[in-house]
Amino acid sequence: MEWKGRRQSDNIEDRRGDPSMGGLGRGGGFSFPSGGGMGRRGGGLSIGTIIFLVVLYLIFKAMGIDLLQVMDGGMSSGPGYEQSQSGGSQTPANDEMTAFVRTVLAETEDTWQGIFQSMGREYEDPKLVLFSGQTQSGCGFASAATGPFYCPQDRKVYLDTAFFNELSRKFGASGDFAEAYVVSHEVGHHVQNLLGILPKFNEARQRMSEADANKMSVRVELQADCFAGIWGKFTQQKGILEAGDLEEALNAAQQIGDDTLQKRSQGYVVPESFNHGTSAQRVKWFKRGFDTGQMQACDTFSGPV
Image (cartoon, rainbow, N blue to C red; front, side, top):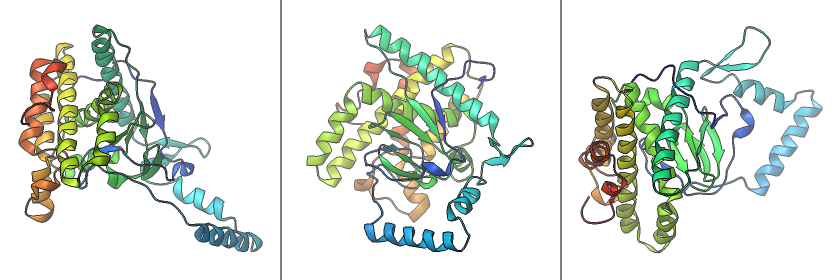
């Protein structure tokens, strides 16, 4: 993928190395598979726990030990960051990865702004949050184990870039266009949100059984794959794609299908628990978006998927 030297998006919120961003919130994010699936996240600390922590802090403070400084020092030197040679500020160790994500996000902005304009609508760019280890979102607490996800409440994509290493090492899906597919899939959820698809689904699933909600979730996820394919088509038309790039994305779609993930993790599949789609379905719908470049071709809600 010929991404270097192209426009980079300013819609990035880099929280890596910021210990203040851990926390909890509401639920309802749409996640990229990371051994788990899409679901609600939430929780919190009890009043008793908070009182205990305050008392513990005061005790150590009286002993001359500032726990806040100790915690800050431990968290700010976590993976993905290194000390700057001048001063003690933290700088990302993977600057090239940051530039790559900024560029891919910019390409999605250009694509969807043009498509929405042709529809007589205005596209609202999403924010993309880079984090390391854990963070908070409008949809609740997020960790590296959550995998990349889109939160419709705050209209932000959340990405721990360490997931790209996992994508290659754990899932066998390497290559920059495989990584771009991850970002474009989550942006696809943002497109669904702007079109009113996600709000309708979130409302409807409150009245659904778990099995029916999973079936509808599969259709939502496959449409996001199809939208990612549309972005890929526009990227190809710009001459950015290189030989083998499409195969990288299709391989990624193949490797993160529900059936493939379940076979890998537990040796058998439970179809009623699928919430992202099978490998064959994910490949099919990404390729449909890529082949047609048309949003009307991405109607996953009519007929079989």
